[in-house]
Amino acid sequence: MSTLEVSNLNDGTTTVATTFVTNGSAKGYVHFNGGIVSGSVSIYESFNKSSITDNGTADYTVTATNAMNTTQYIVTASANANMSGYGGLRSSSATASLTSTTEQYYGSTNGNFVELNFLMSATHGDLA
Amino acid sequence: MTHGHLWDRLAEAKTRLDPVQSKYRVLFEDPATPDEPAKVLVPDPNFMAAALEGDILPPIETYQRDRGVPDGQPKEHPYAAPIPAMTEEEAIEYLIMKDIPPNVWRDYEGNRCIMRIVPVELIPSDRNFRNAWRINQETEMAA
Image (cartoon, rainbow over all chains, first blue to last red; front, side, top):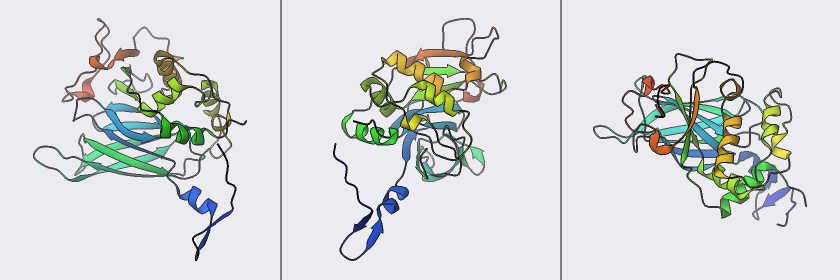
């Protein structure tokens, strides 16, 4: 594998530092089933994750393979509860904690824990 | 040739390896939170592919040493030399030591069985009483 060493990228009119691109890239992502589709939690698509722990109703812990450098990283999460009777985008929260690195996800509607069928997130920040 | 950064190896591996859905799950109860239900660890398919392929993941000891590294300080596991391929069973053991607290798999001295590696079929599919799940102590059933 060859390595291209450049400090800046230029498209003909605008120049940006290479770090602008690398720092802005997602360092991990995951899209998983919260359990109500097949009866058990499963992972559809991911990068830089090692496992998901099903902690209980609508409560999940996602763990990274390559940890982040600090606990001050960013997790952007969303969820879909396209279940019979009601559907659409539902709220979920993700909390970054521990640099080992884990994230906690909760599915909820109107403050009540609700199991969601599609949960997805992306992680930004500095890698360890 | 250097082995580079773990994240780079993971990115490269994702371009050429098919995800591997493990046939195992890890059931465990955390003695630090005895009132909480049993938890179920689900291995990531891309992680399993990397573990079975070899020369991607760092030694498990590096993760364990990194647990004690203060926030923001350099960590060892992203820069450690990768280890050879594992079997699926070895990969699950690696994952237990990486992602489950040591007070479950290493430090617990009680008589209660608080962790089991089980085939995925033994995980109940009815989640109506998910918060009541406990590891069955009397039979080989999962929960």
